[in-house]
Length: 109
Length: 120
Image (cartoon, rainbow over the protein chains, first blue to last red):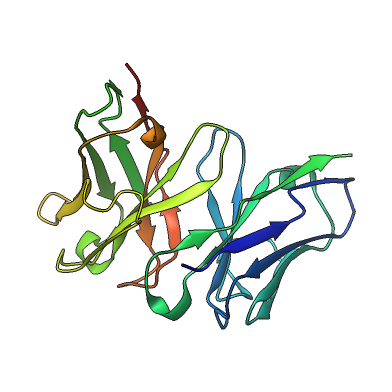
């Protein structure tokens, strides 16, 4: 199975900061990667799919990049609503199992 | 508006069985694959199972294969997860999630989850 490793596991940042989260796959997944945001007590929300495609309604300060085994989620200017945990998810070759990274918690500095 | 409402989560003893349900509305249910994803308390997300739009194809995580069965009733816009031989490590919040497409393998809508606790 493909393993997904996110870093850092926790990130402390201030409003207005540029934030970057990294996700690495144990083997190439082309661009088959999604990013989700989860706030405490809430279900995850899709932000990015196919590595860099922004889901409808998601603010443009969120962007995704990468291919193969290394991917990044960038928040260009962190807003108060963005403090949450972020997960990457691979869907390589359109075949299960589907796997998530361990998550990155973005905290207020 | 897409809505997914899970139900059926309870406290159950190890070795017991449980069936979770997910009622879907706001979209054409039988146009989409559906998934179950779980989250143990304080932990990350774990994909559990997938069913195709017509129920003809099903997939499972190794951790639940042979114990869990996913199914759907398109006439009732409902998704199910039959859970047998439950273990303490199955304790989690179980989310029903809609696939982005016929079978795109990522999730554009999630329910609020139903809590399964396996404990004696």
